[in-house]
Figure 1 (cartoon, rainbow, N blue to C red):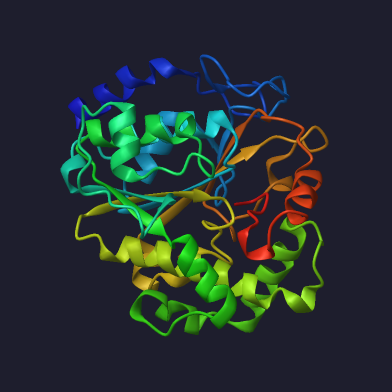
Figure 2: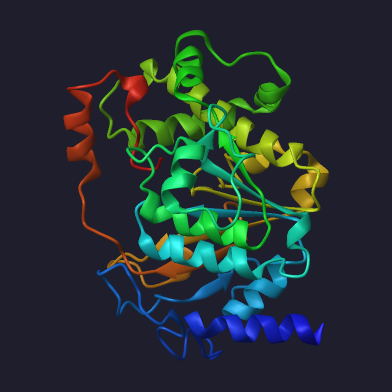
Length: 324
């Protein structure tokens, strides 16, 4: 136990881990260098909140709590470098004494990509080649350090997503009735309606709602696939890294896990701060995540403008929404 704590403390060189409550000290928990340039002085930046108790935690305390659960879901905003920095640190910290019995599942890898030939010590170029890494969708500079950190910990990396070909098939013909996607059969209409709302908004209201059923099917299939990848791991611990909507307890991957698996799962949501919101409860609730970690904002990109330009060039099934 003492060895475990010492390891955590030593590895916190990346963070300033003062433990005063968030209400008293702004920017309490903070990487030495935030990568995202916007709103660094926001009072929530660096704060970690346990949503059930509304307690403010240090990174060490967060790891201590998360490590009691064998399934940890990390929800990110894909283009925020600080989210990738935190994820890499969490991978190194969560199960240091049990890394041989831990797996990492990534939304950023799909079933067309082979992961069983990658090992620690490979160069970036070799890893990208072995993985057939898709830089156009997931920049290697964002996820390469995470994958390398896992391999250095002897944590195998696994794909969780479905391939582009499979997405096209589901878009046209619906979700296949296979074991991999069986959990979609238990999703209620109320949840499907919430997914429809999110798909409509994340695609910037560019399509009529009554034409979005295929995209809802794709979203549900992705969540089912990520959950199936978790279930397939024979290891004791599984960490999933995915977009925040995928990890949402009310609509995402957790609903595709069994009740027992849900009891053994904890979700942490990495969230960019907003200039107009200074209270943690303005961002998310316990119904969606168990913990929230606030970071600066990466950019002021207008995703809807970008999406409208994509829309003119590609079919809807190819377009990646702002929430991934």
